[in-house]
Image (cartoon, rainbow, N blue to C red):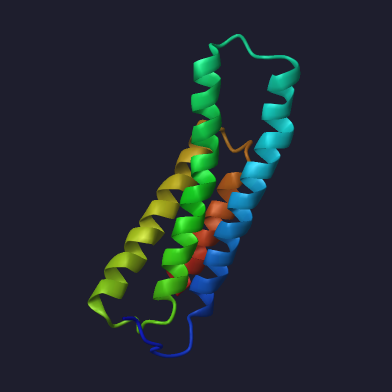
Length: 126
């Protein structure tokens, strides 16, 4: 059973909140800007592939929510706990890699890399 160990780390909580916002915006904008258009004018890819792309799109949101829950959970644990340090830096590395991937593959045109960079920075400051 988890118990309260102290005041939360607000950098980590801020990063968790940004994850929730990022996930919601990603799903809503995807539905509005991409998938509604596909209903009107289906792209020239098989229907099954469209379903896979849509599922993958929303898995990103689910994973953002899971990461937010993990961050919220570790935010109240002292930084000197070995497990906290391991999880904390694993999450930092994950967001840094995601940021670089989006930046590289979209040549900086997709604004998601900026939010991922802010999340990475908040977590690194924690």
